[in-house]
Image 1 (cartoon, one colour):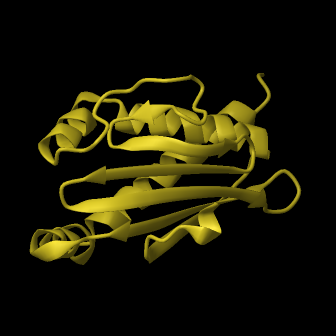
Image 2: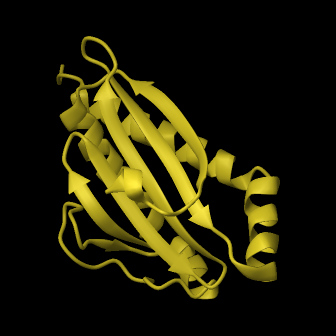
Length: 157
C-alpha cells in the first residue's frame, strides 16, 4: 500500500534503537498516543480543521485507530505503521518502518509524505518545513520512541 501512496515524498528520519522490534513497536505506539492525544495536539488539529480531532478506535493502535490529526491506515506490529490525515492546508502520511538493526537493535524509519494544494497550502508548507519545525518535531518524536523502547526492553534489576 505505501509504495503506491500518491502523496509526494517529503523526508525521512531514522534512528537505531537498542531494543527488539516488539519493544520498539510498543514504544512507537506509546509515544504517538502521548504526543498526539494531549490537549495541545488536539487543539492544533481543531485549529487547522483536521478530519480527525479526537482519539478513538481500537487500542493498542491498529487499523482504524484515530489520533488527533491522524487515522491508522495500516498496522503490522513490529514491522510498519501507516498514519494518514488531512486538514485544510494538506493531505499527509507518516509511515513508520521497523527493520533489523543488528543484534538486539531495531532501525526505525519515519517517512513523511504530503500534498499542499493551493496558495494557502504552499504557505503552510513554507511555514512548517521551511522553518525546520517539522524536522525538529520528528527528531523529538524519534528520540522519545527510542527512550521509551530502550527503557521497556531493559530487564528489571
